[in-house]
Amino acid sequence: DFFDCDSALASRYSLIRTRFGTIPTSELGALYYLLIGFGVLYAWASAQRQAVLSFLFLSLIPATLYSLFMAYISVFKLGVLCLLCLTTYLCNFLLLLLIPSAAETRFRNLFAFFRSARPGLIFYTVFTLLFFAIGLLSFRGLNPKIHKAYAQVSKKDYLKLFYSMPQETLD
Image 1 (tube, helix red, strand yellow):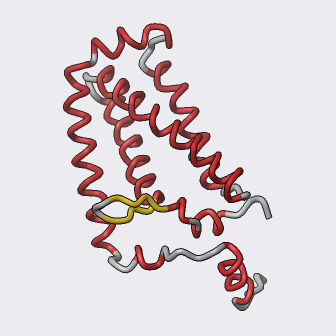
Image 2: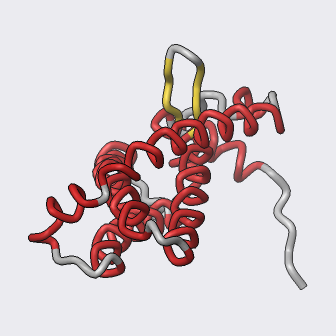
């Protein structure tokens, strides 16, 4: 099947390997969307709306590029498409288009917009790095065995095990 979240999650591309350890992209995405959600709420209630929205826009650029890369990997390398992943790709793209309008600026005026918000950008960048560090450490503390659960399994072996499980019927 072309739409298959299980194969995408079981692939080696669902993990980011660093010298500090392996990070599942699902954990990173959960933290990122928490940050975006809190950022939008904070921008809505804050006097520093321009700085917060410019930071969110700048963070969406690499997120959208990463989404394009992962969509390419999913479709052309793995031959599957995860609907949850597709939803996140679309969310990143739509947010990239909507944040400038929420900041009441046009795309051609973005550089002036960023210059006016520069002092707050440094604060929000440091805050985000701390947020991700604490979040990743917290995820690891919740279930220390979770990274072993993401063992490398081939798509064929995974599907064989999946379909050999007893199927329950819904009444």
